[in-house]
Length: 361
Image (cartoon, rainbow, N blue to C red; front, top):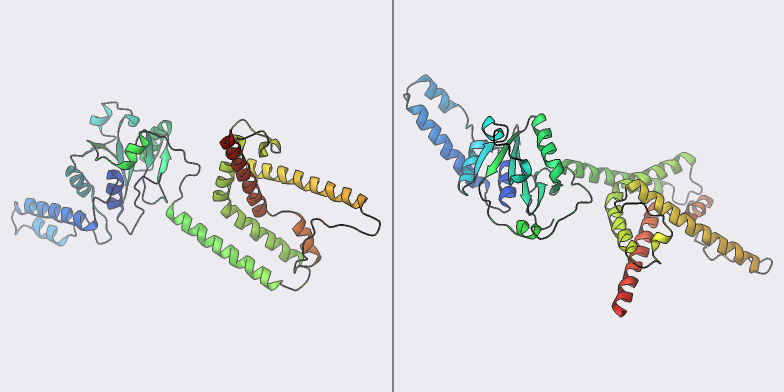
């Protein structure tokens, strides 16, 4: 979706973002929209002056702030409508009786502009797929054809006004590219505020974990409560980081499943679909590496039986941690992060080997 133009929210300039996301380029700036707003204000003033410049209504009108813009960056529907007229585009209210009588299926339209209170955003068809180009999102959100009508109905139920954009939109790279290919979206984009809050929480958790580790550095065995806290903080951090890592793992597993019969799917049972949930991935990782650990333990036992009395080999020996005896127990079981990294590495190595084999053929 890199070819899709998507302006993210800046101040209260959602009308500007809405227009540029609709037209797929930096077509309008706050200065240009302000100029349109001032022109509308002047036209309204002239109409009011027709009733007499000394009338009470005219004096009251002059004292009121502009209804087409304000200092925060908000612009009215009239400004947006006039800006689109430059491109030969027209706005029609989606739920108006005139439009509803046409009984047009939403998927046969090209784009919509949605408004709630002072926020504007675009829903547009690019190629053969629909996208929510809301500037409050971290990126474009894919909307299926079957979900589009439900999405619009839900917006109306929440109080949104929806306008159908009529006319020929200017050509854009994303539309041309998506005419030839269809995209898939593994994870829906978050709201910008949610992403910032998540990053802040992640930093706080990591700071707390570092403090716990520093406090127990060299102090011997961890207190049970502190160890529980450390585990909880680590798990919370892993859950925050899991989304992108699992996307990489999912892609790696899917690629390796398409390779030779000697891939990771021999050790991990497959389900009927390739779109795995987070819980399925976690269970698969645990099952695979538990089996690997059991095999390693069996090798150790066999090695101990072969070694002469009084000599015990330690093929998987690890250095003792600062946490003392408990540290060695923690080292025997792979962490979630190590497990994930190992799975991705194994999968990618399998894919590379398969590609080399295909190249030789």
